[in-house]
Image 1 (cartoon, rainbow, N blue to C red):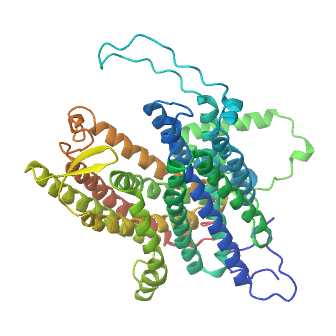
Image 2: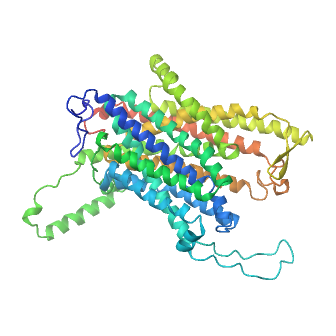
Image 3: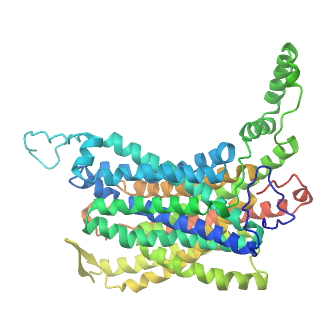
Amino acid sequence: MPAPRTREQPRVPGERRPLLPRGVQGPRRWRRAAGAAVLLVEMLERAAFFGITANLVLYLNSTNFNWAGEQASRAALVFLGASYLLAPVGGWLADVYLGRYRAVALSLLLYLAASGLLPATAFPDGRSSFCGEMPASPLGPACPSPDCPRASPSPYCAPVLYAGLLLIALAASSVRSNLTSFGADQVMDLGRDATRRFFNWFYWSINLGAVLSLLVVAFIQQNISFLLGYSIPVGCVGLAFFIFLFATPVFITKPPMGSQVSSMLKLALQNCCPQLWQRHLARSHRDRQGARLLPDQRSPQPGASLQEDIANFQVLVKILPVMVTLVPYWMVYFQIPEAWLLLANVVVVLILVPLKDRLIDPLLLRCKLLPSALQKMALGMLFGFTSVIVAGVLEMERLHYIHHNQTVSQEIGEVLYNAAPLSIWWQIPQYLLIGISEIFASIPGLEFAYSEAPRSMQGAIMGIFFCLSGVGSLLGSSLVALLSLPGGWLHCPEDFGNINNCRMDLYFFLLAGIQAVTALLFVWIAGRYERVSQGPASHSCFSRDRG
């Protein structure tokens, strides 16, 4: 029998629900099974993604391709940037044409085909089939000085590798945009608490996939072979695709709702430029009068009503400022793991998410504290600010030892560093704080993007959420590049990697200042959002067309 529906979630026309065998009871079990299948697919997909990115620079630097360092780094940056910036495309395609189920299935299939390029080019015959023979390095006169310019040849197999990486980025971004909402659809009938818990474990699955990839796949790539190391991500995607298809009978699938982009643009034009809109209406009226109307054109076409378009446009106008003010938070967040150790942050999140699900969230619910996702996100920003302050204070202490020549020699690989005599355990507070920040900002952020978006734009809104996190990461990298110019706080070429003459402490305090200002702006915008949402108009049947 089909699972019961709540009064707030009317059945969508064209929606397919699983038909359980006769005599089988407990639709909650089937909803949980569908949610668990989505979590497993997400974990495998993230393991594949991080398995591809972890050693991509080393792979392109290897004797297989002999790319220069800056060429390999540029390819990795393009791949990571595209995997975030293309996220709205997959969400929009699902909303308009495919539906989330088919969008995820087709994206996984594209993912599987494109990721197979990396192991295929890891052995000589495959490389020669896709890329041809590697051109021999031209012999030339020796450089008379170390500063003489060297011509950088075109990287070998660049068109094929860039095309493959961009296809993987498109597929990964589409899976990320649609699988999140698709998974929440599976447990929505179980109540809001079930949806909240789904996002907790969805985020936990992301980080579990990252840990498995960084610990296992990256080790195999570095110490055994790239052929085996890049075959594992292909296997992960293949297994994820199989699990997704195998679980199809228990999935709830919803049809695409059609495009409301043109309606949104018309409403935006009407509100921003009323005179231009009036001229457009007058011109359209004249065109209709001059045109011959066929009989079959007189019947109205199905679609969203004007009231729904206006309501969805109003919701979109309220959601976007909230999401945009998260960009500086992502800018700060991505700099902490880049400045220290990504793996430590991931492990902290893996520990904290179960605590949040089993202890923190029920306690907040009983005490009626932080009832909304926006309030939790503001708390996450506060913890992010505190984490950067702690990192800056620790860096000040480290530089104090350095400037008083109280250093110890530390060899990492074949490079000797002058390190401060501080225990690595002093970094635990900042890892813990940024982990707490992440579970309060990122997880409720996903819940907010899903629950507040109009049903016809859920995929696109979720894609915008992930896209803006990527924009924050790119802005953070741009800030580092700016401060690394001559005269900047991070310009210290004479240190040879020791960063002892850099002012990382000032850099962290700058990030803290950015976070503090944007957190205050976020609190103000979120407060206005909640006041408007709680107004009388928000309870209209057209004010929320949510899925």
